[in-house]
Structure formats: C-alpha cells, structure tokens
Image (cartoon, rainbow, N blue to C red; front, side):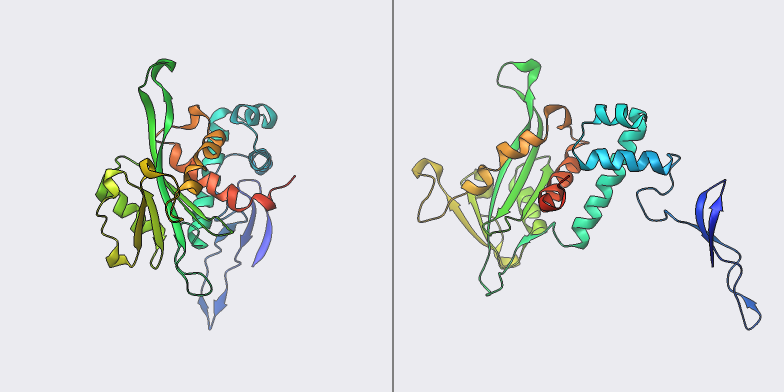
Length: 252
C-alpha cells in the first residue's frame, strides 16, 4: 500500500497489487484519503470545506459563510447538510438520541415531555401560526439529556411512537394533561406515566414539567423563523442537540 497525490483525485492510498500464493488479491484499487468523511465525494476543494466547517463550528450565519469562504450558497448548504448528517450519526452511535432509563443506583430517571410549535404569525399578524410541531423531552438529571423531534400530528398514536423511540424502558414520563396524553399505552415498554394539571398548579406533589417547558424559549432563540421549515427543522434540531451536548468542547 502506497500513499501519494494524483491530479485527478487528490491524495489517495493505492494498493500495488498484493499477491498471495500466486493469486492477486488486489487490482491496484485506490482509496481516497477523505473516504467516509465530510470531505468525500465532493467537487469542493478540501481547503474550502475546512473553511466552511470552521465557520459552522463558531456559529457563523449561512450568508456570512458564503462571503467569508468565497463559496456559493449551494456549496455552503451542501457542506452544512453533510455536517448535520454526521452529527446524526454521532448521536446515534453514542446512543444520545434515547434518554431516561435507570440511573447508576437503579432508580428510574424522570423524563419531562412537552410539545411546542415552531413557526411565525401568518403575514406577521393575527393568531394563525404556520410552522412545525416539535415534541421534546428532557431528563431531570444533572446532564439534562434531551430529545427533540418534529411531528405531523400530536395525537395519541404519534406520541406513543415518539416516547417508545426516544425514552428508555424503566423511565418515569411526566406530561401535562393534553388530551392526547390520556391513556397512553406505556406499561408494555416499562414506562410509568405521570401527569400535572396546570389548572390546579404547576407543581403538584413535586410533579411538574417546568424543565422542558422552560427550555422552549432558549431553543427557539437558537432557531430563527427562517430555519423553521418542515425540511430543515429535523436537521436543525439534531444540530441543536449536538451543540448542546458539546457546549464545553466548542470554545474558540
């Protein structure tokens, strides 16, 4: 195996045609240095991709990325989308998409769940709000692990699927008394469901959903209205969770 630079494809590993007992095991295949990375299979020069990656890491807006990197809007969007796909893969591999379960002492972890609409007033007036519904959950632990996912509807079957996908068995799930939460079938996945009736107070016997409800404003501040589309929201939520997880690692 040798390493070198080729005008047609940049830096690559190349097999020289290994033979074993007279049998050729490799036909001189070439493997790009950037294989299985954000830089793979793109016409964008690596140095431009590095620039966009840096500006993304420090939270630069899309328009400013275009100006600072000298790349087109299409290129910047493509690189950022590739980055977001890698974030999803990282969260999946680290099992950070599922929260709750049992703590180190074997006690059930409380997960507060709520839903909120991300959108804006139609024509900036009136009560009609166009946007995307998001269901979120947060642990009542020091880590405050969180999940966020977009949904088309907020009915019982959808909420049951969301909880079974994102909340680990053994958890205690707390919600408000929104009608769709009534009678959720969670016992078969070993999850206890507790509710709080806001009309009777926000903290009944220590049961509340203040943690998740207090998180929505901060999340929305990070996601301006122009990013709240059905296409972009799932990826923007992935990015939010990943950045939140690595908050202490992204200081520049």
